[in-house]
Image 1 (cartoon, rainbow, N blue to C red):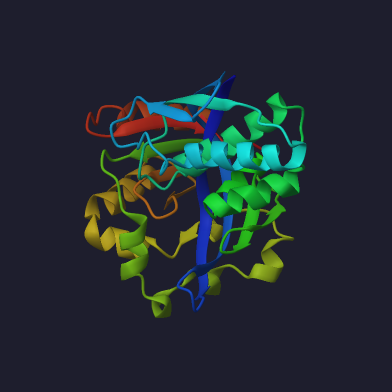
Image 2: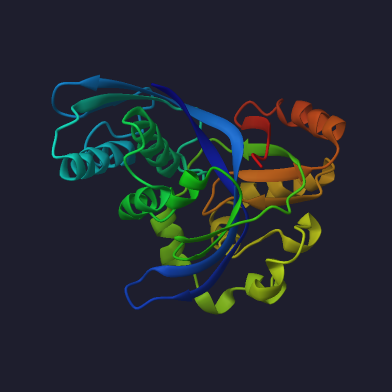
Length: 284
């Protein structure tokens, strides 16, 4: 199996509250984008094996793609009463690691979808989503393969079909940000996105970058990495309809409704050799 595993961006991210167990309750609009890791899966007789061409990605049981394969194989064996065999998974990373783009969660979801298809669809999407949620809160989103509004800890999903086909100019600054560190330093009392985006009204609204691009985690990350704020400002100066940090960072993206302007901005930013620049599309 040769599979494509897409990145995602958060078009807004509102922290609504925090549960007693420490998990944060979110209201976010996420969309897949056209940046892909490549995943090659081969069947083998025993023992799951995983390899990756990126030094920061673990090649053991802690890898989310490994966890996805194990969950699927165990569930298949329980359902069918037969061992389907194990797999070798090779990851070719194109999605920056630690960049707020969901690469690990996407890899896990892609493995679940690929194995489910390979074995004749033994599980429904709902069952796969339950498996995915055991791995991470973003995994169910990637199983949808389209833009969604996510609430709860990210597991309650509703498709969203009011996005225009913006070009996405993504800037990865060359360093990662720890999600755990960001949430540890986050102050729930300082959120402002829920004042800007009304949950009940937005589901009926069309997404407008100038009105809806908002990320409650930006203030934490920008206080630690001022370069990211500068990238956001630069994207706006280059003609973006709006710009935002994705997830908990470190990637910053700009949305463009003018494709020629997006290409020109890409050429300007591409001169910054320490940055990784991607010009791509929303997957609608």
